Image (cartoon, rainbow, N blue to C red):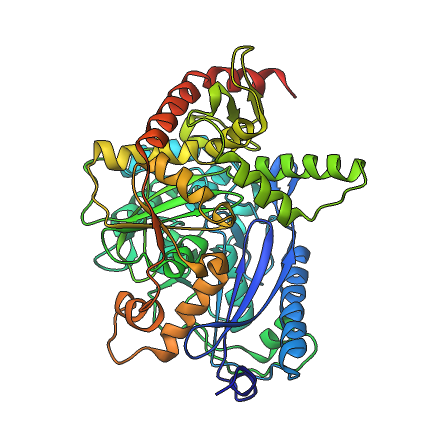
Length: 530
């Protein structure tokens, strides 16, 4: 069948992901190949000291993204989307979205980027003897309780951004296990929230007499392949106000961007891993067994089918690179030579390959916001050099590219050097890898491991959640998610692998040691630069 016929017959599958700066929709065919896409740019806001996206921005963004997809389908195939084989919703993980018994949002969405939950995360980590990150939903909830926030007594339901959108489109208060594991810890054996930790939390808050227990307000957990509801008539109009899209379409469990990144890079088996590098960055290594002890830098989450994962999450990645690229574009425009941003990124990334392996001594910190792994609740982007350093454009850009993954290296050194975790394949995806061979080579040097990048890596999480929706309707009987991805999606796509060179390894290690020594300078910038 042609792509046009697939769309007309309602056999296409839709994946939508809410990223930090872009909402993206991908339509795939029965062979899991993208056939149309749409997008919408958005940006978080700092309001009352907290990073958020307004409820209005969420729904306007969803509708604008879907409308852009409809335009792409119309332009390419001259048809309208009337129905689909399946839909999947994904979004940035964690954060805090509480609702009352009427379904009203009690406070604005508090995103993963907020670092105001230090007291709660510390207390819960000690209580559970388990690393509870600042951005997890349970940290936000307990911090609100510690703060004595008025809304807490009225909570009827809390969820993540993906869970919220899915609920509004289907009426189902459910969550994929990967995203749920970023709310509170889950048990890889039972595929449910850790009962011992749930009980400890309930005992902890009992004196507050809030009128609810934790499981009363949490979404139900579903694993990949489970039926997660169908598009309601109300949901169809919220997604497509034009009225063309019909109700009844099945949904896969909503997932976080970490889970969709694993699906999009075929990294759900044990001893595989992936690195997603865009506005934020995170690595996901699928573990063979539990770690020997909890680490503040390592989050324990799961794959979409429930396998244990060691996750290193960094709040900052490419935002500072984007800012410098914008400055260079201004310079070009000043001289009457406008260049599109895509070309600027490609030229600047490629130029970095000409730099010294240790960046000629140049040092950069990309902390647009706080960075918990290195102990920062706030950040200030910073570039520094000494008069004797080798200061040129190539080294400057290489220093910025190294900075984007420096904290990621610090976290992963725990897994590989202290816990001796073994991995057979790490795959990169996201904007950091868009210029062929550049980010891939830098990451290989940082992690000391070969890095693969697939041609489909640029499709990102929207494609990943579309694959999970495809798994719902197209898998063979009793076929596991790893088997489905291996045989039906990635059978002829192992990606292109780049191994680190001795020179790059030595250069990055020299850079990272200087980076660690310079952290007090970044701390001073936070203290003295408002």
